Length: 150
Image (cartoon, rainbow, N blue to C red; front, side):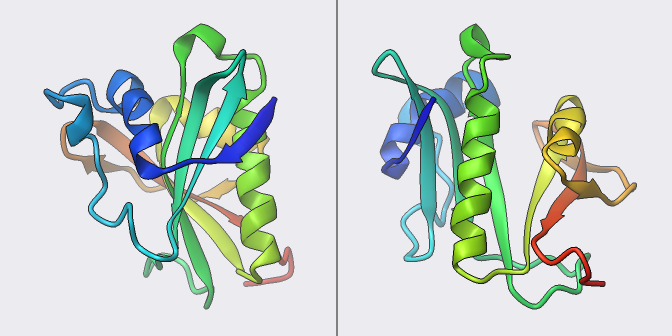
């Protein structure tokens, strides 16, 4: 599965289909920082179609003490290709990119249904539930690049 850099606009159809079907129009499936200089948007390509996406932003959470943090947001895989490795390929590429930039941790707000996926990818979690408006319960999950970090 090939993973490529996308424009924010190219992520919107899957954001709408998989993550935010409650939003009326695909073109409204934006994150307010999509065009920030540090933003990275990735997509898994299968049969010339974008079948998986994620967006990465330099952001910190007070729940982690790591100095240099990046956040993974809006991760989605088309239901028609789940289980084919698209999600794994995207996260592996994201980890590679963020590690190469010298960051300490990649973190995300994970939906209940995604906890197992991120766990299998080597992410740890903070066992505290919180509600994301219009979406549902989440837990913070994180991948530390330096296993000895506290």
